[in-house]
Amino acid sequence: MDWFRLDSKVAVITGGSRGIGLAIAEGMAQAGAHVVLVARGADMLTEAVNRICASGGSAEGIVLDVQDIAAGQQMIADVIARRGRLDILVNNAGMNIRTATLEVTPDDFDRILAVNLRGPFFLCQAAAKHMVSAQTGKIINIASLSSFVGLRKIASYASSKGALVQMTRTMSAEWARDNVQVNAIAPGFIRTDLNRKLWENEAVLNWVIGNTPAGRLGTPEDIVGAALFLASPASNFVTGHVLAVDGGFLSGGTWPL
Image (cartoon, rainbow, N blue to C red; front, side):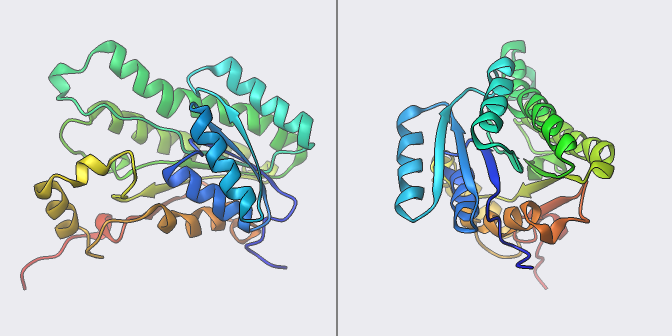
């Protein structure tokens, strides 16, 4: 068996038109999967699908806001009806509003949790109904260093990502005997188009690099290997795990000795 191949598999990746989601989609397509990219922006989605297909992969795009629970459930049903199966779900779509906790509004809090937690919960539910019936499936939730570490001005985001980890563990326990593995990846500080402005702040960049033992920012491509492992037969006895891909940030920092 080629433990890391995904031939004939069908994978749905939310937030798949750019950044980490696109890198994961490209990696899974190269491993043989048909990838269904889900995102809100039609233009970027088309570009991403064309990019994967131009490289010899199999891909399609679906415009969807993961906050729309009914639309998400219908999307899962449509993919299964069209492709005859659903093997992998990657909940990557996410958002953050950096605001001091004292200034967080109920609307902002609700929006963050709707994208980062509520949407993934019900996509997992819709996908798992099929996977449990098929007695096989892989779900990968994209968590965060903020699932474990508290940082200023992201209390709402950290709340959603901390809950996502517990959601992952609970679902993994519930579906393990149905041969459905549910795991999470906690990326470290990753350089993407969405957070480019953050890294233009020299103080922030220096703090991150100084506190990351690997001494650099990560790239979306750094997440691909972990995603392929958790999506492939290589992880058939791994469930409820959170795999940090963070250059060593959570393991400790450097000190002047």
